[in-house]
Amino acid sequence: MRITMTVNGEAREADDVWEGESLLYVLRERLGLPGSKNACEQGECGSCSVYLDGVLACACLVAAGQAQGRDVVTVEGLADGDELHPVQQAYVEAGAVQCGFCTPGLVVATHDLLSRRPDPTDPEIREALAGNLCRCTGYEKILDAVRLAAQRTTPTDLEGSR
Ligand code: FES
Ligand code: FES
Image (spheres, helix red, strand yellow):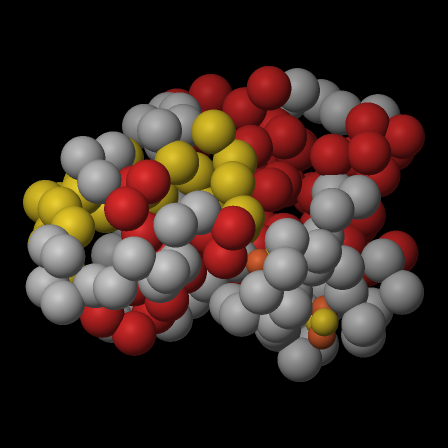
């Protein structure tokens, strides 16, 4: 089947998609957007987090057909060309990126948190990111990254994805 959707503000289509294929597979393998990672493919790790019609979703759990005609924003869509989004920059500066496998999902989830709670408490950060697993950092640097991002991110930085 053919799937058409808006991805990062552009109309995109994929042909020959089979019914069991996930949105994550379509994004990575058919549309050339490898930012969303495939770590568990079971909705357990959050590494594939994207916005689907403005709502945070695990792309591995969304059937490609469910994305037909909808609006998807991936981690690639948060940056402004070559310029990192302030949330992405905060992760780099806080040293919260080690192997980086969890990072795209954490960045999208942090973006989502800050658009709802611009100045989150530590418990709110922990709760919001509870679905995003990291095997490397021990999470402290991730907390630092979210605090730094909260200081730097303006409401304008968070427009357009929700
Ligand atoms: S790859 Fe989707 S939640 Fe782990
Ligand atoms: S940086 Fe390696 S899994 Fe998080």
